[in-house]
Amino acid sequence: MNFRERFGEEPAGGNRQAEPGAGENVDLVLEEALKDFRMSVHAWSEAAYSRPRLATPVVRRRSWRPAAGWALGLALAAGSVSGTVYQRHHRQELARIAAARAAEQQRLVREQQAREEEEDLLAKVDKDVSREVPSAMEPLAQLMAEGGQ
Image (cartoon, rainbow, N blue to C red; front, side, top):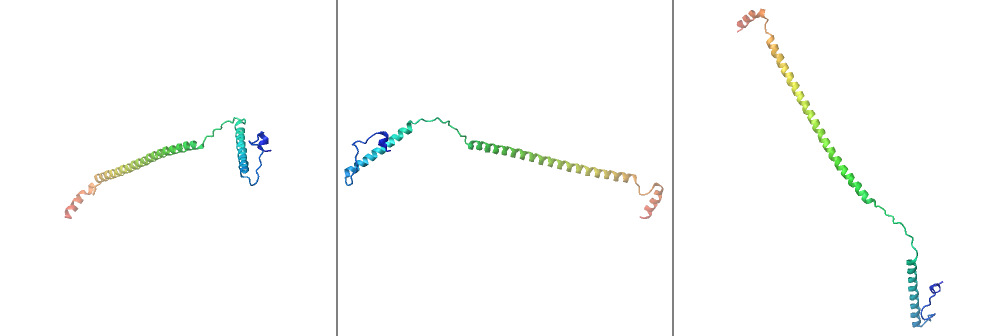
């Protein structure tokens, strides 16, 4: 079935056949072919535009890129905040350790000073309490000290 039979149109000028050697007839055949082509394109376009269309719901796909951007941004912010908190905590711990070391050092210095004071006091008491010679032997010790000179 060709276009003419389908739509019932005959090209202008009737049924013309191209005879070999006739230049005018070849132009007519070409003209007729182009006219048939034009009519078929118009018919197809009209059929395509006039066919019933079903309304399809528009599905909006949300892109994952904005969500991924937000997620990465939040992860970066959380990392920054946690890094800052960790550094602050680390500095506080170092300060606490340094303070504990300083307190320990001061305690050791105080203990050393207390020991030295105690030793000095014991030495003074020992010096005050002890005598070189007992009191009964003191006259003899004086004689020895005078005779030895």
